[in-house]
Image (cartoon, rainbow, N blue to C red; front, side, top):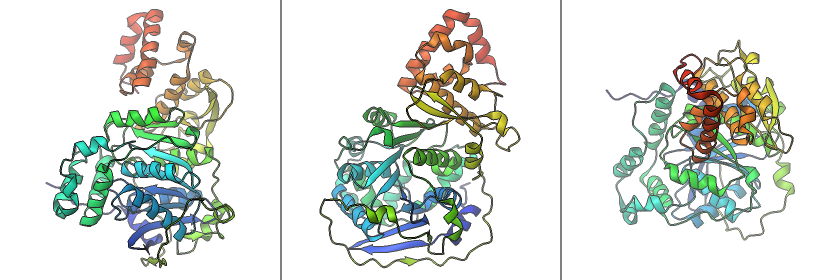
Length: 473
């Protein structure tokens, strides 16, 4: 029997608190959520082909309502080529009086974020890219009917988009995220679907960016996504100095299925690139969704030298909102971010500092032991200490914490040069967890560890590791 979608309680609360804005700019209609202190340079979230502004509601609820960042989630309007997208998005930023931005894009949204960073480099301060790509050639080849997409009936477009979403069985959180996105696809018009598919297949590729790799974070899921692994590998090769954030599971929509991990990676990225939250302004945010004074950061900077197109006079229309006394608890704990950060211990890996969360500090929490998420800057080498901290009190009982623990150890594995010297401190199971990831760079390093391990301890310890069902990662 087909599942009947029911809106989550936290989404209902979100809709009651955060108004949906509509702004006509020229012939384009922009729909967006904007919540958080205006004095903070915003993080703008761009959805994929099947997404809307609503799919990032968990990021707004955590990063804006609790932490104090300004988050703007937008719908991609009906634009029919990439140049039109760049010009339209720039007009939108001008209309809401925002100059500098941080961009978080998934799938098609990540591709459009890169294009905007390429053509308007002075406006983009950093990028977070998730399950995305560099060029559209492979999508065009897989869609031979692309020239007539604008004439295709709505039900066929929806069917085509939905076939790109993997059909179950899913674990509960991923199944819920799929149901939510499918419900959002049903709200999209024929023109909206056709224009997004056109952007996906229209011939284009991202050229080298002026933005330094150190201001880019690549956040991918390791289970599956609609974006082929080959395209994700191309993205990683283009930005070799970018920070990596790997999620063990999460599917196509980790921002919905794994919001705690995604929000933590977003928060760490923003801190690393120098953006500080303003939690003291969260309580003073009025009903229009913004708080604090005028955006000093955006007002004092020079405008982009490139010529701007003239836009219409924007008139913001918002849905009515009724305040509620407190937010309901969602299926994922939104407080995990703050608890992890408050119990962090910093180690330094390969000239890059790694935040390792000590399991002992979280042993009484409902999530069990916590683990490693990464920030990076130039310091000293202490990867052995980082691994020891990550393994302290192992194993965690919560699957999400196991995944987070793997992130920290993975970073240390990739930084280690003296394999023989670290074997005394490394649980060999991590080598086989790395081999199972399918990532070429990870597998190469883990094969080196496997070789040294068999030379040192023989096959006996490997067999013991593989049959251990209690401490498995």
